[in-house]
Length: 441
Image (cartoon, rainbow, N blue to C red; front, side, top):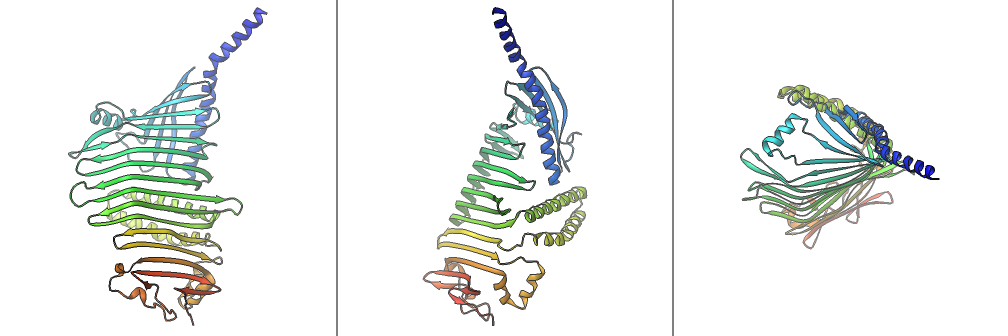
């Protein structure tokens, strides 16, 4: 019995001692696979970014990994192209944890030594779990540097990112105290959060949000200031109809520039019911155009004539491609909207909403007859619009109150008390502006 017990104990001890080694073996494969997945995403998007593992020294309970990020068009620094990272990895029982440094890059180590007294403010730790989840934490400690005679104070920040499902799902939260320079500018209270799931290379379902407590510049004399700025980007994919909707909201408690000031400002812009495949092709083309333009600008160097020629040539070549690609998303039911527009001015409030929808599939060529037959708009679009703003903003101009088209029985706006008010809608095959039908014949 004692021999059996001793044998069991020895097995457990050996297993316990050997587990970090086995974990290291498994994690090496996982880490290399993760880098491969990242490279595939970068390749598919044509971003010109690639990751290469230069060295992987796996030990019994720890490993050292050296890898490099290369960015197309990035000028070599001191003869070293790209950014080199070194990971010191500790093997655990269910995961490995790496600590990453950038000091192998001479430009970075010189900056730390010469500007920060040898204290590296950047801390990067990453945990690779056996469940294939990856959690990365980036911490920046507060530091100050001198730039052209001005002191630049950089606040502390933290970013935590959780990756799952082979880099197809990302969750991240970040905070940053901000950045300032005495008597020049001040930005404080930055926060960021996103939760995204990959639908395809160019389509990520989820929400991205960014917030800013305040920004002031310059700090003396007439200055601009924004307080409690917020923005978000939302993509909602519906697999049942293979369509997606995208919107972006932007707002602030107050925005001030010199003597002008607005408060409680917000607007949301978006598109509903887009064909997923058509949108994906459009974004892919857009990315291709941008990448090719950047490549051309990089190749042109500092020659302004060549830079202008590159931009002109790229844009001209892209026009037809963009039009053709756009037609793939101009499908029946697609909606473009502006919602919850609101701004508080000293003279009163501005409010508005707009929704325009396609009633049938369209091509660019099919819009041309509208020039001579404006009544065809009722066969193509449906409309809902509302807006009001203080009449004093229009000054003495009567343009908005006068009919712009012979068939209009009212202007785009009507004056009600101290406001100009607009309402537009299509109903029963007719267009109404401020309750009056627009006559096309």
